[in-house]
Structures are given as C-alpha cells and as structure tokens.
Image (cartoon, rainbow, N blue to C red; front, top):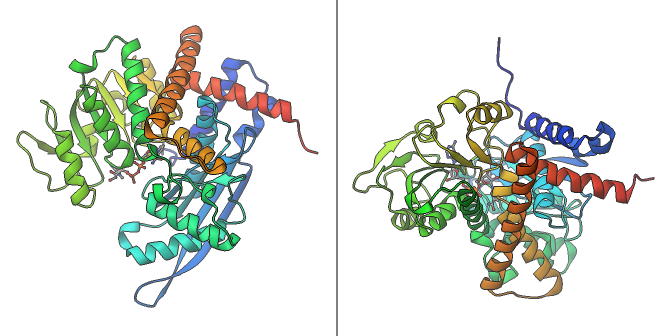
Length: 420
Ligand code: NAD
C-alpha cells in the first residue's frame, strides 16, 4: 500500500484528539482548537540584484487568539507550505498554553531558500512580506519572532517596516529583536537554555546522571547550538551533532566550544570541521546512534515509522517543532523510550519573547539575570505540572502536555463564549 504523504497538521489533529479523549471532552468542547482562526496567503514580487523580478509565496496563519494575542515565528525555507505553517501555528497555541503565558498561536513563512539570495534581496523580501501581512500583525494582535533561517536582523527589518507603515516606532510588533531596538537580554539563548533546563529536570526524575550521560543533537542552528552549549556546561558528553551539511561523531565527546567558534566563522556549517577523533556521519546515522539522550533540533518529520525502531536512546527531548510523527510516537512508546514533547521542551524561546514584549509595552529593561531566573521558574513549573499529570494518568508526556494545554484552551473558550 502506498504511504500517505506526510502532513504535519494531521499529527496535530491526532494529538489533540488523543488529549481530548483522556480529558473526556465532547468534540464540541474542543472543535475550535482543530481549526486555524485565520489564514493569509500572500504572493509578492521582489526585485533581484540583477534587475529581474521574482515572485514569492508566503503565509501568516493565526491558529488561536483564545488566550491572548497570537504569537509565533517566521520561517524562510524552500519547503514552507500551508500545512506546515498551520501545524506550526497550532503548536504555538499549545506551547503558550502549557507554559501558561497569555498568548494564542500563529506562524508565518516564506517559501524561499535564503542561501540563494543576497543580503539586500533578503531584506527586500522581508520588507515586502511584512507589508503584505501587516494588516494581521501588531503588538496586540499577532507578534512574530525568529524561526528557521530568520534571526534578530530579520526581526529588525520587520520592526522597521511595520513602524514605517504606522508612522511611529512599534518595538512590540516583533520579539527576538537586537537589544539596541528593544530586544531582551537572554532572548538569543532562551530556547536552547530552556531545552537544557527541561533535559536536566527529566533526567533527574529518571535518575540519569548528567555527568555520565551522552547526548546527540541534530541541528546546530540557534536552538541546537545553544542546547549543546548548556548541556556540555552541565557536564554532559555531547557525542554527535549535525546540520544540513553533515554530522560529526566522537564517542569520547566533542569539543563543543571549539565547534561553536568554528560555526561562527564558517557560515554556520559543520562541513570541513576537523578535530582529532571525529568521524563524519549522515543525519540518518546520527539519529540511530547509541546515546543516552537524543535531541532533534532541526526540522519536523525526522523520527518516523521508518527509523523509530532503530532509535538507540533512552530519552528524546524535542527541541525542534514536530520532529516525531504520530506513527513514530506509538513505536517509541511501545519500546519504552521516554519522549519530552516540543511544546514543553522548546518553549523557552516564546517565554522570553513574552518577557521582551512585556518589557516593550512598559518601556522597561530587565537585566539578564532577572530574565534567566524568570525563564527557569516558568520552565521548571511547567515541567512539574506536565510531569505530575503524566504520573497521575500514566500516559505519554506528549499526551500529558497536550492535556494540560487543552484544558486551559477549552476553559478560555468557555469563559469567553461564542460570538455573536
Ligand atoms: P536555524 O535556522 O537557526 O537552524 C536550523 C538547523 O537545522 C541548522 O543547523 C540547519 O543546518 C539544520 N538543518 C536544516 N535542515 C536539516 C536537515 N534536513 N537535516 C539536519 N539538519 C538540518 O533554526 P532554529 O531557530 O534553530 O530552529 C530549529 C528548530 O527549532 C525548528 O523546528 C524551529 O521551529 C524550532 N524552534 C525554534 C525556536 C527559536 O527560538 N529559534 C523556538 C522554538 C522552536
């Protein structure tokens, strides 16, 4: 039988239904969480450096505003499509709910391979895309942030374009901005720091000693590299890392500070990195390595029914959004592999985005220690809530995290009622 094409939004629906069944909800109680509230598809021209004009397609999808303004990153990637953005938007809704910050969920994306554009072309693309989605975004409506292939510089262009359209500076329209234009200290590291905190908490519950455990990380971008930095600082042996160009492996442990320095000066790519004792491996091989902890931190759809039986880790912490399919989830559960889901594990970024937005709205500026302490408090408290729910109901952590979030979403909808 031919296998169905992968659709991440189907994953979302499966997960919501399974949480609803644990909570004993009627479909009418939670139906609204299965549909995005608003979807905008845009097509727009960008002038290339050689004078030609090229058309691009993008999206901004708002999944839910039940608990507050919509919130979610913007991705520039050649595989961006409607179902991917819909899924990413829904994951944001559940993520904000599980950590208890007053946001709904959204996501945006442009179908483009940014490596094929010059910096000036990328800036023109970002500004035009911002103008196209401007009717939907704003500090009280929908607040974008960085995601795959976007960063503080891109957020600065978005903030400037939106501010020009409004006629005054609007720093609260995006988070993940550079500090000089209203960004928050600690935002750059927040997602990876949060992943490391959650890894520490679950390892503690599983009686796994960080000092004697190995970890393998797929993806060495914003999230993967910072996760590697903090886990190695906590004493873990990082034995393998990878990116789109290759993977590197050393069973005795990689030199993470050296790798992070190398990435900074070599276009963020590991290919050509050299060090004693390393072997080059593919991303497929990396996922199947014998390791105590496996952290997918690249893209969705990495652990599937094709390789779930070959995963050789006791614990998976999802730093990427949606790296595991529903079919793989079932296989991992049967095999007794513990998995901490994306909506909890990688929520650190949106938590500090919330801090950034709150500082912008009040024209305040917190020091880094305050940001990090508050982040740690939110992450540990969300972890404990999910842990206790899981412990009480003997279900997977994904199921437990979705139950915690879905309860809050259903309650918010009930309190607000249905318009008109
Ligand atoms: P990034 O663009 O900074 O890094 C992506 C990394 O993945 C790069 O190292 C890239 O080379 C690698 N990669 C790309 N395709 C790959 C492939 N096919 N195989 C292996 N590696 C590949 O992006 P990021 O911000 O680090 O985001 C990574 C993941 O984390 C995404 O799923 C994103 O949605 C999620 N996330 C990001 C944030 C954030 O704050 N940036 C927050 C929460 C979740």
